[in-house]
Image 1 (cartoon, rainbow, N blue to C red):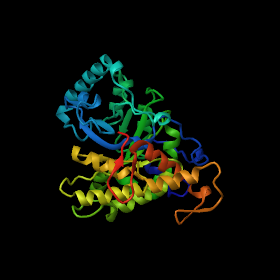
Image 2: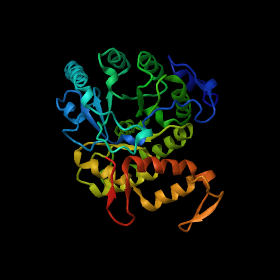
Image 3: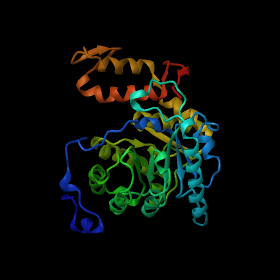
Image 4: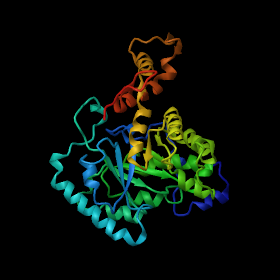
Length: 354
């Protein structure tokens, strides 16, 4: 925070400065068993819905990667109590049938072909609701929480709300407030995320629509998000948070009648290393999953880079490969292939692991 003006520092009321806790890159990230690529196609489901249990046990949407049970924007204020009651009912139902529902495949077991449930997250409206949810019976059945509108102004409140959560809960803060347009703020927030929680930060979600709203804009219908000011910010967020070891997920694409543009944006999402994309309709699920499938030639290069006897620099498929600089990329390619399978270069035939 030393680079920030005194006025900017003063704005972070009720927060503590984390600048003195800067550590080596990745050093404070806590290990967990699931890989963020398992988010894949993520579907927000209002907690008022009564078919969430059918999705968890894969009677509905059998190929969905992850779901987010929403108590925030997808639930109107007068339906909040109903949503909380239905979440409690869902947890009780889940607990009754827990022995019949397989856990999601863990990173160490991604080669398993057994059917599994999707990853399940809950999104509370605010830190006080998260603290309330931490006391729900059977809340440990879910995989984690999506925390909306997290920035340096609210980080301390979210940190306090997580104090009673299991250390195995996965946290997904959402980057979607006007503060995110300040690069100095984001550097402070990256450090704060590494130190604030006892639980692992699974991924950071880029909240595209809220970021557009902060600019008094809406995403244009005929443009990729990356051709807008929010796309410019997305590149900045990658440059800020990924070097600290975090994964980011891609903004939602809300236009169902633009499948070609959707696929073009997915191609950019994948190329940037974003680990998943929120879907708003079941028709988008297969498109997300196919976009994340790894071409066999790319997987071949990644495995060559990771080979124990790989040379320091070598030519492979008419490409110069250098394990010292390409190893992190190669590791993520293998992780992606383990989750989404592979695709033959030049055609649409692919082997999925879903």
